[in-house]
Length: 205
Image (cartoon, rainbow, N blue to C red):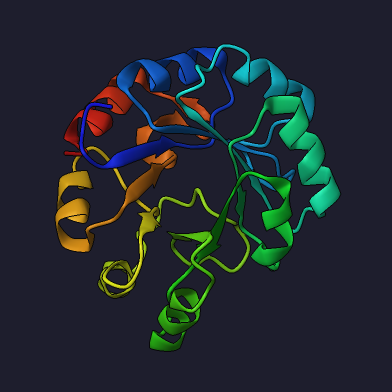
């Protein structure tokens, strides 16, 4: 990994982009398995995309209100390392799958920070920007001030509006355990730019 902060490149839809993320030193690669997303892929496409991902790179499926048994099938199809929950799921129900459980939260109030901070330590928290309909990948910036508060309490993954030109500032201010980037390294939804991926990972220092 190029920098000291872990980088997850998410919303991947093409094998070349997966390869670019791996080559740049990404800690994890993410795939959106929710039909409502412009970056949505099918289980068969997921299997194809992860075929050449080395074992030291985490494979993450992003889901929205997907039943546990369906996530288990995705786990088996793709050798998932983690599931990233962007709906109204109870993350505790997914801990039995034997993979990491990441819960996305939007910190729209101090109470939301407290709720996120109270989640069991087995659950990894991802801070994303709030949107009433879209579940991530909006390009909107999360609340860095509240994210900083939460990151002082427990490890967090910071997402939401991160790009090569603001990633250093985000890391310096928030102090996240990892960062998650999708639209900030794209030329269009689901189409990544290898040069932007390299620049972002190199800057996550």
